Amino acid sequence: MALHLTSFGPGKVILLGEHGVVYGQPALAAPISRGVRAWAVPSSRCGIEVPESLKSEHASSLERAFRRAAKATGHPKVMVTLESDLPLSMGLGSSGALSIAVSRVLLEAKTGKPAKTADLERVGFELEREFHGTPSGVDHTTSARGEMILFKKGSVRVVRSPKPVRVLVAIVGERPSTKRTVAALRARQALWPARYKRLFLEIGRVAREGAAAVQAGDLDCLGDLMNVNQGLLNAVGLSSEGLEAMVNRLRRLGALGAKLTGAGGDGGAVLGLFREPEPIVAKLSQEGVACFVSQLAGPRAL
Ligand code: MEV
Image (cartoon, rainbow, N blue to C red; front, side, top):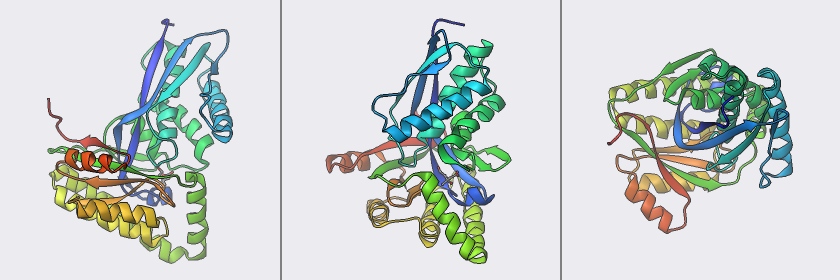
């Protein structure tokens, strides 16, 4: 193998449809500029250097996930190191990004060729299952594709926009693990399955309509769908005071739409859709809000 291999797995945001996607509904998701980088150098064995900054429960799940990936790729003799500029457990797909970055370097170390998307997604899913239990697969698939997609279990469609789709991503704070939030929702829907089914169906419909709005370049419609989706997420018990406060703040600042993104629960991240997000990021940053801009689709300024 080459002396050094490197790969990048982008993090992701879900514009519309989180949680419904676990129940077979579509979700509209896109990669962001932040993510996880993996390096591989030749070694006597296949291993990973676990970052010292990781809490012990995250470190042991990373080791278990890596063992799965090593097995799935035939234990290439490399030592893998990681670097990330994504906040952990904030709904921005840090584990999906890591899964893709690691899978890509292991596959390429083993074969000496660029990894095929299907292999990347297969091995990436092995890792994601270790991190999340029963994930839909939307996070690592978005990271592997590197484009906005309408994802449904078993199908992926790329969604392109004639206009730049740009969001402000604001970090609200710590939240429970995705595994716990998904399990708590599963328990609620098991108590009242008919009602929750109706709500998940509506979340799926909103995601499909959102994909059509992106393709038509209709940002006002996309923003309205984000607001409706936030209401539905609140209805199934996934929002919180902190998330609602940030959603309301972004709407007051002129967002076309704002909603939580990812698993939600008690914290995590909020998206605001703006035509010009930069001045809002500057204003909120001055107030100490951790936030950044990401372009999710559409032509980029040169
Ligand atoms: C997490 O980014 C998205 C969820 O829908 C869980 C999943 O799809 O596995 C909350």
